[in-house]
Image 1: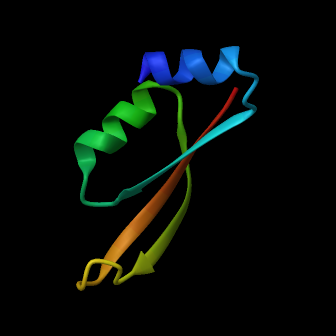
Image 2 (image 1 turned 30 degrees about the horizontal axis):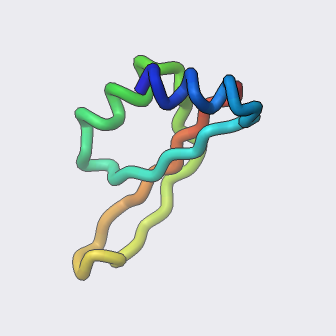
Length: 60
């Protein structure tokens, strides 16, 4: 995660946006620890079962 954020900053990105599922708590922990904030949750059935997608963002 640190390398991804470092690269984005060096290349002049302003924001990193990540998408995960609400059941993937390990991913949420990694994103939170890296400074990302949960900005939106959306129900969907993209994988054939009802789930809740999450959008996380980090402003650089």
